[in-house]
Length: 529
Image 1 (cartoon, rainbow, N blue to C red):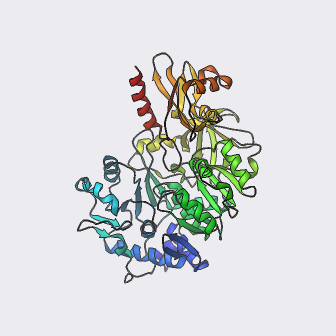
Image 2 (tube, helix red, strand yellow):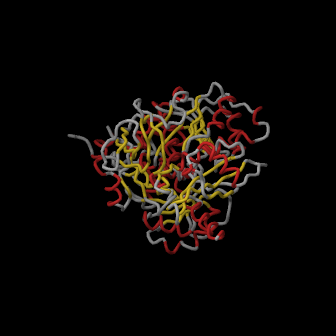
Image 3 (cartoon, helix red, strand yellow):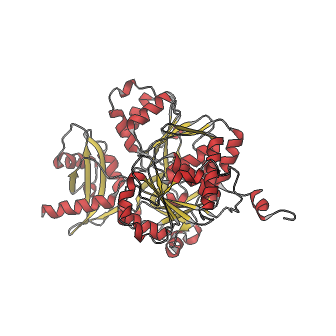
């Protein structure tokens, strides 16, 4: 445009996530944006810290397009670094703090960051692989436990010292510029790097307002780990809409109950495991959760009996099923509270920025009611898999993102999750949905949790295998489970193998890590022979 500098031309109408914080700080300067432990930030204070961080990063030589890895539990330092990077067009790569050294090394070397920040107590493990992280030139630490740190590591808080300017950095940012490089959980295979853009995250705010009804005055607990896209989605939405995030170091049931009562939390967003376990706490029925206006369940459907107990305790609170995917930033579908009576086992209708369809094996749309793969398109879809052009092309074939999830859609647009394509069990010439069998197992009065997988079998090709967690104080045996299943399930759906364990391995979104279960079951089946 005539007479404008390149930055002026860019900033006058751009799509950049960092600008959300500027605007909210202008609208609600004194509203609480973030609290972590004993530190509280208004939107104005948070924006100033983020701007100083952006200038501190620039001073360290970090520039637009650079990646910065971080290995840490939730904290305010994580947030400031993340938003500081976005303000200069750089990209954060968060790592799961439960990863083993070789897994960390793979992701860091694949993403090629220039900087790597590590929580102080996690540094000793990282020292064994530090020299193999070839692209990292800045090693920094996050002081959360007061642990000793090796010489030469940068204190992350030095990036936003008070003597750094709090002015907005002048960097050209465009809608399709990467804002996040997040590696999938790798529940079945090696993780893939999902590139989410500034446009992706702008579109999710539309959904947060229209679909989740988030607004100023809302308060949530930020306990989901920030290496998970659901946590990032919530934080971005709360910043954009002027709401408050009470951040936890990690999900802590005692803290969740305390915060909810003392801080009048209005929105919960948790996987089913939290809703299953919280009612087991002493004096649960006497606790006051009347401030809650919305409880969102994500990662999997909440068992009906558990949901009914919550509805009894919170008759005025709305409940919502939520389905999303990292590749969709993480949009997908949600079931509104008023739709539960007619569609209790649905994941709901598509979120506002997405178009969803169900395709058959020929990549053609199926008639409503038929089972096939869920596909999507819209501004929330990722830019692609980092350094994985072939996998990106395969996923995006025909101009649709192929989710790998098997569903059906009814005439009203309600979607019913059947299973992950890879979790359909092919047994004796029949297809069995692991989720269907899992949902039935939850009906057993002694079952607290359950997962179903297919295990190689010389007779059945795959044998339906159930892994069951009994309720506290209850005992179960194989015969009880088999007899229970035979009463209502077709014979080919009845588990051939049953194993009992104390807890299912899950990722932060509540998804069962079935690759771990397969390995454990494989070892147990070998021991049986």
